[in-house]
Image (tube, rainbow, N blue to C red):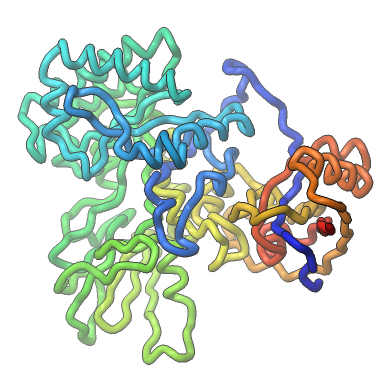
Length: 501
């Protein structure tokens, strides 16, 4: 189909909702939670790596966590980036607004993170007065901005400037928060390290399990900085001697209900610069961190959306990446010249989700959805890693129900997704969908209509195309162009909007 010739044009994706709106107590229970972390700074990235909250599909996740808030000098919760969170980009209000599309979605605000350190959290938690003040002010903060709860990412109690008493004080802090949150039905969760030593030193897990709604395990970062080693191995072959399985075995012995824990899955690769040699297997000496990627620009780390592009065959490149998949470890690694990386792909994530189900964990956690292939550039669908997990859990999503990956430019052309792809078996990777023929209808709108007037005209066209019953089930979503429509909604019937003066 030829591109539309118009004065100003963008795109909108329409799909049938078929959604029942539930109240707070009427949301149907799901057997597994899917916790999705969003790195709020991802919208500052370059080019197609820049992520916008509007790209999130609200029913992909049961819980969405916005990162990060921090502690101010008075020991209270506060934004770390007023421009991005509150004043201009309005990240808080945009992410909470996703609940309008999925009222059963829980949106949490995370406090802490690696860059916040530990010392000021240790200081806040060491006295009852400051703990209680923090709990009271935090509840007011969450209520003011509309969040459903708080996720505590203190990295880590007793370490990085902390004191030995942090282990006990952390429990007391959680108890203060729980007492304040409970009457308002706010969720209280935490993200904790997967290292056995850090778990032993920093967390009284049996007591925390009694107070927290659930705990997100960061079951990655097992790798060494000295040697090029696997970052998130399920079993064996980790230089530290720790794996996901050893972490779960340790937690099992604490007596905590396993349903309290979410298995962490990262969409980031750990990368190294090495001295190339004949044997490039895990365990070789590292010279330093790997080269930064074009989007995340962080030495030693790549987003999956960066690495999947890098691994595509390139006839002009002097050498190609060698990719190895370790089935037993459920992890992959790749190398080219002096660059070496360890990461998860579709196959390994499927194995790990099945492991979480077999161990009767409460669900999974993704760090972070903004470095998944959210554009669908490397696969036949957007968010291939997240979608793989959803299929394994039985939460099959229709490709036609995905949100467009880009906001519209100017006025818009509309497209209606009317076909439903056949669900992919949970134990098979997604295959590329062949392009189908498109049937196009054009709606001509004269003059310079207001947004309301244009939407009315579009609605009339939808009713003419789909009939009154189906058209009432349709919701408008924006796309950048028809190429994106072909990728995320194959077989859709587009309605072009041509504006004439």
